Length: 392
Image (cartoon, rainbow, N blue to C red; front, top):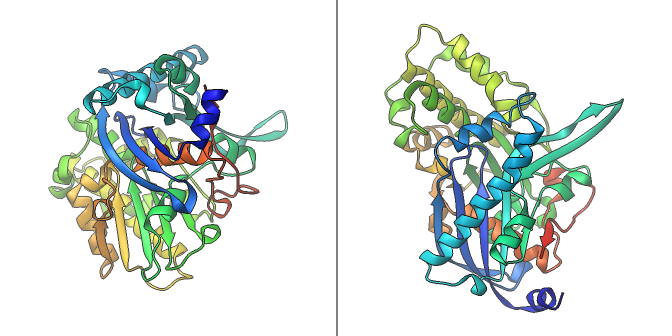
């Protein structure tokens, strides 16, 4: 406990943030130097790297993430396996940064979402909300010898929240402006938006998952081309949009939901994937990828327009995440957002690929500092609360 007390009172910390998204593309690891906490937080990225999972591991994780298809023995095993891969990522990035493990003060780990049911499931007549991120932080703490904070989403769900998105707190800390209306867009497997009108107070921030990001595009690329993603959007660019299919996909119930809301593989996974394949018979693979890409771009714009209606126009759309590397998708966003300036988070000192990993380093710092980092208006939780479990 003496070590924990020293950590709590330490003004300058070196923290590793770990993130693995819904696409299970790999483990993002960021070493971040952090000074202060809350609105006084200052940080500097020391090192960022993405580490691949072993071949075919992604398919095992996804197979155990679909409703009714996972098995309790496999999920239990994966909980430890992912923690070991996260541990390996920590050791590798520390080595590449020419540091030692004993120089790292703290690890903040998002874990790997295996299932997310914020609106609940009925068991014996009672509705229970839940979320499950595996890659147990206790395992990471014991294998690295570094205090680890994980399971950030659970506390918010326990208080009636969606448990997501959590990045908006980071967005508010880093990107808020006195003069400009900004929207922050992170395109991972799921796309999420944070709306920051000028001079916005934390309690008034709006944020939500807009719908699919890379998830459908990546899965279709795997099915049709045995590739993990559409590099630069080249395949989508070579196809044509299947308008009847796009119109059908736009009717998805998620797009009609009011805030707060979050989504995942449960709504934009295998079921909608099968719908796309079934409804696109007779069209080329390129056309199908182009249509899935258009759905992502359109849903981001449409959802942003719906929920930004109470504010004036957006001056800047700041993009990050793996989808920021899809040049065709960015072109389609520019088409929809028209006069809004689209920038990458790099312009603000936040690597577009490292943003979420940096975020969980900062969230770990807030937790150890005793500061609440959920936003009730965003998640729907009953109150602000400190997030995560501290594993010694």
